[in-house]
Length: 324
Length: 102
Length: 164
Image 1 (cartoon, chains in turn brown, purple, red):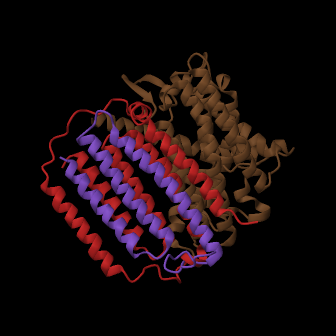
Image 2 (cartoon, rainbow over the protein chains, first blue to last red):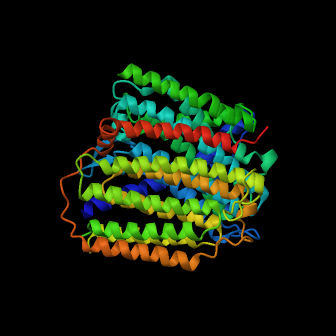
Image 3 (cartoon, rainbow over the protein chains, first blue to last red):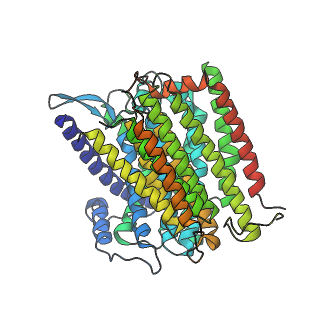
């Protein structure tokens, strides 16, 4: 009993450390890549190739003054980023990084929990994240924040429908809601080959879910300053920022697990394959940000409700018929 | 040992809270929240009875799922009505919505 | 006290305190936000009762969708839900008596009944069992529910749409 608890605690600690470090370096990766896409260098002053830049940024943000705008609802104002970051981290409790391995003479699973309804929990957790956005926007007592919060919650809720519908096709293929079982079902062939339409819908929805360009309307600088996080600074802003970049990794991990075969792959060890797939997804997201201009709000809603949801429904129907 | 009665006592307390909310609130949205509490109390009962009395066919789970679905429907229509009332009458308090025409 | 009892009492406290805040808060946004821990507590109770699928649906629909919708409407009707408007009517004493009496009555009945020991065992794979139950013996209820959803969808759009 104690051994199980210690093992789970150790795994959580390692996971937390890896995720936070990965998020910090993801920001650096984005700045570097964006720099290259725009024919400039990106950060290169702090440490070799700018590798210590995340550390410098972190120290700068953490030593900033901790403030709240006048008229803000203090409790909710502090709770919103905490909630958002907690929920963003929660998802990793059920995502499998690799199969069972032999470590220090005992069999260790490379996931925290194999839950029967893991996929539903992941979807539920991402809809909990909406509270962070909407409450952060409301409690700041600022027009821009409130508009950004309302916009982002409408966007996230709309695209969650198409995301869930796309993912349901994978559930049909695998016959299980458990992420571990879904990965095991892809040993013979990745689901992206069997469900290309679902993958496309998933990809576009994931782009909108993470509030990334070209769907970054919640924080459209030209209209809304920075949306729901306009009035945030210091550590609370860091939490929003981490949650946002963690969401990219989360969507990458979900894409890898659901469509790209999870840890399966030849030659290299399973965990390396998983990380490579997630990295590929993240790089593509950054690439898209550097390439595609922002859409209008009505175009965004039209795409979600009039294109993605019908396509996902149709795809679900066809796959159900084919599988029968 | 936590038995069926523990869950039933808790759910009746939750139901009472919901009822109090429905009876005392003026705002239609707040009344809806009270109703949600009452529905949740009923759901706890359904699931608890499934676990302790009739587990074989998970009938209570099915009932709870249907209740959750209908709660979503009720919230959607209720909130649509609230938005409409607010647009026409600029109030969402049920004791001030007393016009028969919009 | 074992782990199950500890978890139950913690969740029960969460549900009751959250529910109290829902019906008592003067600020409606706070009331809606308190709905979240209440519903999460109920989801935790479902975990204790081995109802995995209902837990997931509770998270997804109740916490993730219905409460967000409620919050959304509160923010959209800020003019009528703000702090300047009194949120409670004159029925408070009456409501206290009625709901208090109801709870006491229920407790009096519930605690007198000798509930037997747990009967039978739950099926091992919960989502599968629920799915089979929904699509075989309860398929009529399932279909009627989907009809209700359709009617609600159409009704809500018709009601909430701005007239041309």
